[in-house]
Image (cartoon, rainbow over all chains, first blue to last red; front, side, top):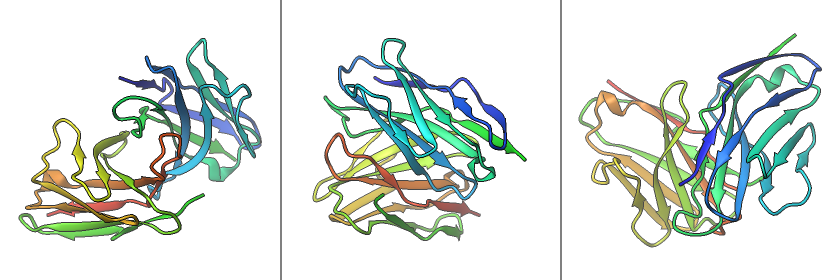
Length: 117
Length: 116
């Protein structure tokens, strides 16, 4: 079974500053993928970034980067130069690449990010 | 990224009626789709995995006779909430992936169901 832990229920960040959203995970699968999704108040889940467990380099997508520390089982999301439109819920998710349920995502409880002008 | 649509975006129905929600992958084929339920201020809870041409796989505690899932084509899955009750009021979201375990899941915009 997989477990995702997001310890920050809410975070505040000043506009134009960087912010790190924490995510730790637990799995017995040797191969897996880690995902971050953004959910604005409209409800839609927007895919942000992906990191494979065997990827050597940390993933980056524009202002988003994933600080992947495999030994610590952490996959923190870093948002640089925060914008007001970044205010939303952010979910960390994980997907094993083997065994039953290998397509299923397991989500954390989410972090609500508020960007302050 | 890939586009997944959901219809309707919002529905209000009377208790005892059935409601059908459609999930479509618009620009790719999805052998596997997923249905989630989300209560206010909570995370997504997987309800079932919908496989094209076969029966859906339901998560523990989800009533398969209440939440009917049909995945008749590679681009369409439907969730029917039968005999809806107020406690079924929730946000329902579908996602679709290409079917490979490494594919990213893309989500629909969700359907907010209110049962009076």
